[in-house]
Amino acid sequence: MTEQPRIAITPERALVDVARDIRIDGFPAYAFITVTASMRMCGAQWRSQAVFAAGHDGSLDLSRDCPVSGSYAEPSAMGIVWSMACCDMDRVVFPPDRTEALVIDIEASDGRHTATARLVQEFLAEGVTHRAVREQVGGMTVSGELYTPAGPGPHPLVIYMNGSSGGVNAPRAALFAARGYQCLALAIFNYDGRPKYLNDMPLEYFEQALRWARAELAPRDGFVALSGISRGGETSLLVAAHYPELVSAVVAYVPSPVMHGVVSAGAPGTGRDAQVWTKAGEPLPHLWQDNASADWDAAYASDPPYRQTHAFLSATRDSAAFERARIPVERYPGPIMLVSASDDGFWPSTAYSEIVVRQRMAYGLPTFHHVCMGAGHHVHYPYLPATLISKPHAMSGLLLDAGGTPAANAAGNEGSYLAVLDFLGRTAGGDRRG
Image 1 (cartoon, helix red, strand yellow):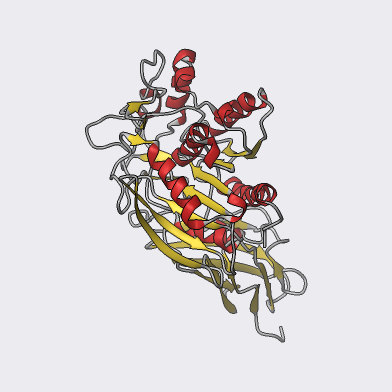
Image 2: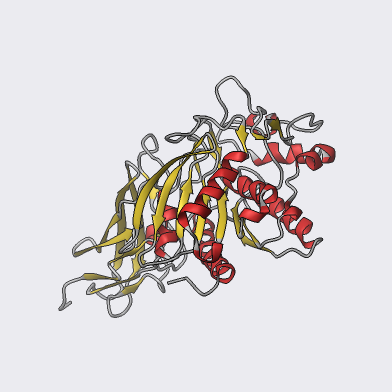
């Protein structure tokens, strides 16, 4: 061997949604090379490791070469990144709730020779700006975090909502801004200025938020996409159905076609079936009310981690209760994109999404469904670790099984991200994929 081993990463620093080219050379021919990735994210250490056999020239191309053993099994340009596992589950918060860059150290060693390199995943593109939103509108506090693209604008707007953990997803909002959309990460609950729990949530809050955003943020051509994940996906469909004139498009991640009770996000002592949605001061019916087949024990009678899908499936068997609680998605005439996960452990998001598709197709309404095959409930943006399948729920503390496998989750994150950008580019006008 005449040259020193080295790791070449292209690009070394870029947005988190950019795949990297990782090549290793300078090792002896056919050497067994152990490649390790490590980083600190969300207060915890993450790590992956895979062993490869070098080629005749002592090189590796991670997009081409298959690991002999280790954290992942198939050739993948970013496999050493998405296969990182959390080393300290007691400290983890996931997905990231802050926009600080992720710094990943890569090491390659054959036991005698070692090479190191670093790649940086950023959430904030150059020129993207941020401001906190705490606005008193109609007697309510519209709360969230606004990210605005570089350039003079005007920019189309995406309003994005979290699920049953509450809070906001600032990194996802920053990524939308990086790709040309101003994005308001809108808080529903469990955030500054908002109620701690999901109980008794008026739809008028979302109406006020939409009217404020249209007036104050002046989106390009009046385009406002409403988006959310899990309970945020349910919220997106529900709000669009009730205020269709305020919504230009919907992107619903792992959503529900029916309204539910608080489940894991209610105030202590109120129970899983406590009321969530109200309008004009009146409660809207949810699936678990007067349901003859609902059985929470279908999910919680076994040992954790709990796969909640079994309980949600039990409740769908009462067709009358299901129809009472169904979101009238046919009232919204604009385009809807659904992103589901076919091994969803929280609730059956693929079957749920197909119900929305069938209902809307009967009315000839534009509806698109992207299925993340074999993936679980945690659908994120590309190139995050995809290994955190079971974790305690942020509100209830219950250890829940989200479903999927790391490889399927990683593929689902990447594929759905590109599909959503394509959908928004077509509906907002022009290709904004950057």
